Image (cartoon, rainbow, N blue to C red):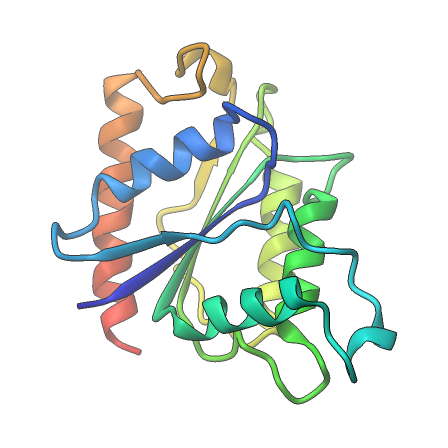
Length: 180
């Protein structure tokens, strides 16, 4: 059984990113173990903590290490990823030489209420994942624009075509992740 870690870059309640993540998960096998990793409670990464890490760091790093593959869904904040998501990447990749992300396959999706679909955040995240040594599914590219027109007030994706697109992308990710 494959363990899929899900990292949602938006920490707001009823986020569209969470809705996109839920729609992706619908395409995973029934026996997949899915674990949403909470990034909202992580103190800002500080190298001074490497010698004596806060409990939140230790638990998060262990949770990352336990996963076989990752699904990342990010909003776009000021043409980049959210501070919470960047912090989570930093926390689990440190201290130097103890990168918990390394070698784990990744799927990246971005969403935005604008027509540009979070494309810049998507590529910023991909660049970080390259450095973190995470092989990343290249196709299909998952840019979800005007997401507010595809979801309900709770952030759940309600558009059938989008649901099918995301579920099918997750099925492709399963095949990709099995190679690793």
